[in-house]
Length: 324
Image (cartoon, rainbow, N blue to C red; front, side):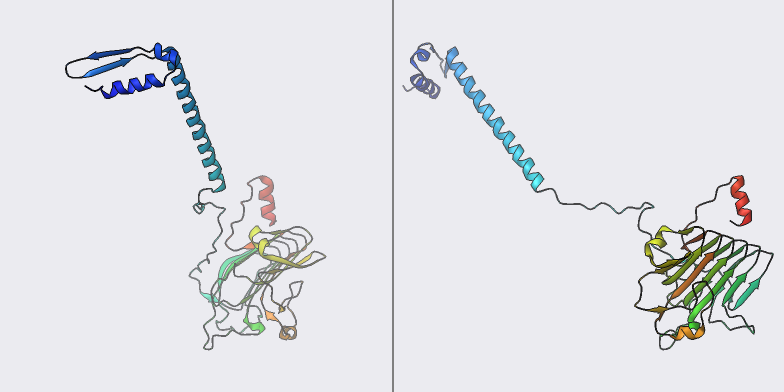
C-alpha cells in the first residue's frame, strides 16, 4: 500500500532538512477507516527560518511595489494628463462685444441750429444727412450752442441710402458735421453711429471753462484731437486703440484704429473748419473729432460705456450746478 500524497510530501521535506532539525521533527500519523491524516510539528528553528524567508519575500514585494509606484509617479510627471480647457468665463471681465444702441422713434433732422445763450439745451436727435436741406445758411448738419448753460445732446446718425454703384462719396460733404459749443458751462455729446452705411463723422465738442464729455461710437476710425490745460481722461477701452500722433502745448492728437498711409481731415487742431480747398489734397478721408476746454476737464470714451456715478455730497452738488 503506497503512502498518501501528504505523507510523501512530509517525508521528502524531512529528507531535505538538516539533521538536528529532522530529529526534532516527529511525524504523527493517524489512520482512519476512510482517510489518513498527517500532522507534523516543525521545530522552532525551522519555523523561524520559514518566517524569516517569508518576511524577506514580503519586504522584497513591498520594495518592488514601492519602486513601481515611484516609476508610475515619475512617468506621470513626464507624461501629464491631457489638457482640458476651462469653461469660458461669464464675468464682467470677459471680452466686451459692442452692440449698437437702437435709434428711438424720432423725426429725422438735418442742418439744425439751436442757439440759447442763457438756457440749457438738452435733447435727443436723429441726424439724417440725406434729408432735404432747409432754406438756411447753416453749414453744419447739427449745431447746438449756448454761452452760460449746459449743452447736452445725444445723437443717432442714420445710414445713408444705398447707391446704385455701391460707392460712397469721396468729398468733404460725406461727413456728418456735428458741433456742440459753449462758453462757461459744460458740454456733453454722445454720438451713436454703428450702421453699415453710416457717413463719416466730423464732431466738435467745445467749451471755454466747462467740462467737456465726448462719447464716440465704437465704429469710429480716424483722428481725435483733445485740448485742455487741465486733465484729459480717456476710457481704458478707447485708450487701448488710441495711437498718439503728437502733443504740443496742451493739444493732443490721436489716431483711433488702424492708421492709413496718409489721411486728410476737415477740421483744424483748434476745432475750427479747415479751408475747403485743403480737403481736396491726396489722402484718405477718415472720421474726425475734437474735444476741448481751456480750463475744464476733457473726458472721452465710447457711447456704450457707463460713466461712474458722482458722489451725493454738498461739494459734488455744488460742482454739478456749476457744470463742472
